[in-house]
Amino acid sequence: MNNAELPTTAGAPRWKIIVTVVVAVAGAAIIGGVFLSRFNAQYAAARRNVAMNRLRMIAMGIHNYEIADGQRGPPAAIYGRDGKPLLSWRVAVLPFLDEKALYDQFHLDEPWDSPHNAALINKMPDIFQPPSGEYQDNGKTSFVVPVAQKVAASGTEGRSSPEINRWGQKRVLIVEAARDGAVEWTKPADLLVDENDPWAGLRDTRGRGLVVAFTDGSTDEIPASTPNNTLNALLLIPGARPAGR
Image (cartoon, rainbow, N blue to C red; front, top):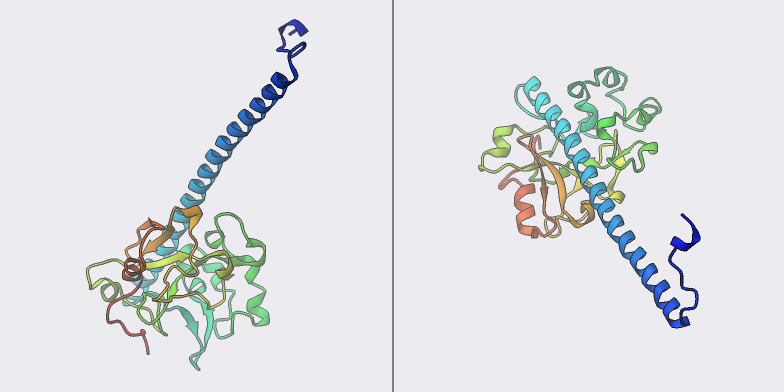
C-alpha cells in the first residue's frame, strides 16, 4: 500500500484531527471491552465446566464408598480412637477415585500434619485441584463439604442415601468454597454452614451462581439470587442429628 491509499488529516482543522483521534480511541476501547467481556464469559464457562466435572467425579467416588461400605457414605473425617479428626474425607475416598496407591501411603492413625502425612500434601490428585489452578502449589483445595448438625457429612459416621433423601429432596453434598475457605486437601476441615447466612464462605463464580454436587451424584449451578431459606433447604436435612453422635 502506498501513501496515497492511507487516510490522512493533512490540511484538516485542528478540531477535526482531535475528534478523529478521540473517535478512534473510543472505538478501540469499545472493541476491547467487548472482546474482554466475551473472554471473561468464556473463561467463566470453561472454569464452571471443569468444576462441575470434578465435582461429579468426587460425588461418584463418595457414592462408590457407600456401596463398598454397604450402609453409609464417608464421615466428614477419619477419626482416631479418641474421637479426634485426623484426616479429611478426601483421603478416605481415594480408593474410589483410582488413587488406592496414594491412599496406602497414609498413616491413618496419625493426624494430617504429622511428619509422615504432611509429606503427602503435595501429592494432591488432579481431581481436587482448584479449576483455575489457584493455590495448587501449596496443596490446597476449594472442594469442601458443608459441615453442620443437619447436613450430609456430619459426626463420626457417614449418612446413608435413604437417610439423606427420605424427605424427597436431594441435598447439597459438595461445594466450592471461596478463596479464603480453601484448605489443605488432607486436612479434616470443611465449610461450616451458618443457617443465618448460608452463602457465607461460598464461591459465587462471577455472579453466575454456585456450582455444587448433590447427594444423587448430579451437579448443577445454584443461582446467585437464591434466597437464604431456599439454600438452607438444599443444604440441611430436616430433623437430622449428627451421625454417630
